[in-house]
Length: 238
Image (spheres, rainbow, N blue to C red):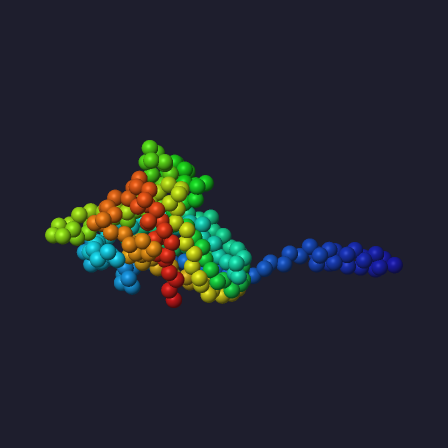
């Protein structure tokens, strides 16, 4: 009889352990790398090597921006969202890595160039040197620059400067890319985002330094052009 009383509690204990077991769904990893080109050629700084859609030669001396609100979709369903706000300086390498991506076949990615209205508030971001330098003047709405694209362009026989700046909530850039990404358990999948700098001046509006102007900051019409052109500056390359 004593053996019966010993075996029954042991059996119940084992059954309880099985019921409490948690099944962990497998996940994958994504590594997003970011690079910059001009019409298929690597971006070089401070060289008058590029020509925009208006036929104007130009160089780039600064390219800085925020990439944020990155979302991964499968058949229109949002499966993964990243709340990281990534500061990008094109003179340096930039990447993001995630390890908790649900297993699925992803067919689109959306993102923002800039910062959403919740975070685009003066002093909201951690006060690093980069974030402080990206602050938008409070007298012009506050928050942060979404983009700083600066350089020089050939004006007849002389060089003139330009500064294509974006900021304030109405001019946040919304981007969406089609993709074909199979997230598999235990595998880090690399995604290459490539920005074509010339697209800022090309589609859907041809931006001319000569006729549109060379300073966009505070100019609603020019910032709207840049924001709409910015929607397709990125592509995914193998």
